[in-house]
Image 1 (tube, rainbow, N blue to C red):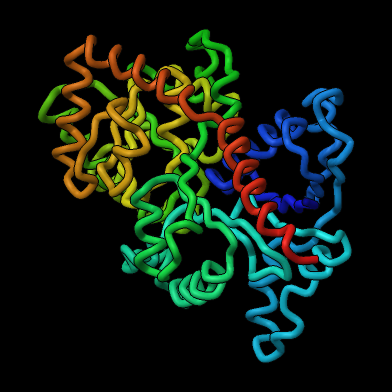
Image 2 (tube, rainbow, N blue to C red):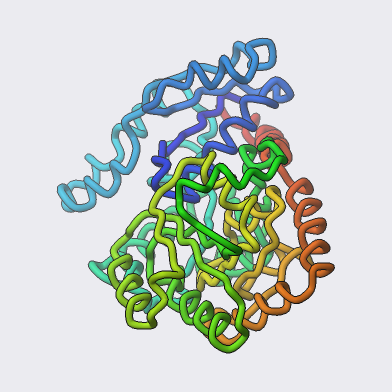
Length: 395
């Protein structure tokens, strides 16, 4: 089959979406020679250097690069031309038709129903599960997401999700037949698996962090629950007498000022570091030197930071949201994200037991290597092969 790979080209500041997509792209290029299908990659970025780095002898000639202008065009047309459905997504559909695609694969969520069979991932459906958070309730965002999923998921040939919890939600919320929802766990990012194992304290000196610290890489959305991480830190310092600090990494999505205010109100400002967006190299160093990753998000079931931490020898303490244990197994300590006291108890348990911390590091490392980007892509190839046997029945 002639298969289109569509990239959203999410910027680094977007967080997990960028990490996830880049991981899959690099993994695809490294194992594409194992697939007999022809591929056309659509991206607005020049991928030639990336292909060169993946070794030309492994990248088959059947891969073609195309410049893409289809990113987020659905949002523009929905708002500017809502009464002219024939205008919508014409760029994407023209690209599919012009390149004679028989299947479209989206590494990030498909922007619309395409003119050919397509595969799309779904990371979460929290607009249905927890619709009260402002980032999915204000300005009609929840309604737009619902409209999108109602239309797109019912037309998708296959939907990719990372856990059985995610699959159950897709089937239940949107009436999708189970055989069209495939579980491909979120893979451990390649840049973490290939990172130098050496722990260098010098690499984080520029951040002026001293002593043991907890790291939390997350953009400043309300659902990321930075507030309870701060309240837990206060409990740890005042009740448990643990000299820990807290390091936040991530871009502001509208909630940063509020988080900083609460930090000040709780008199935790000297103990909380706001680093903003950092490079991959700096994030690796922050993980490797952290006492633990504390991950109090309310959203799931698929999340990237625990996988990054596993690969980099950083023990994980995470929210017990639905699907979290399926993703992380016994390689993490879990807590109720609504209860700062539980977060603090989990951190104290880890801090007072070096054997437990070492066990979690070992289990995390094993977990990180169980499912990589290459495993994900090879499973995707099997789905394409399966569909090809159906596709042969029509022109």
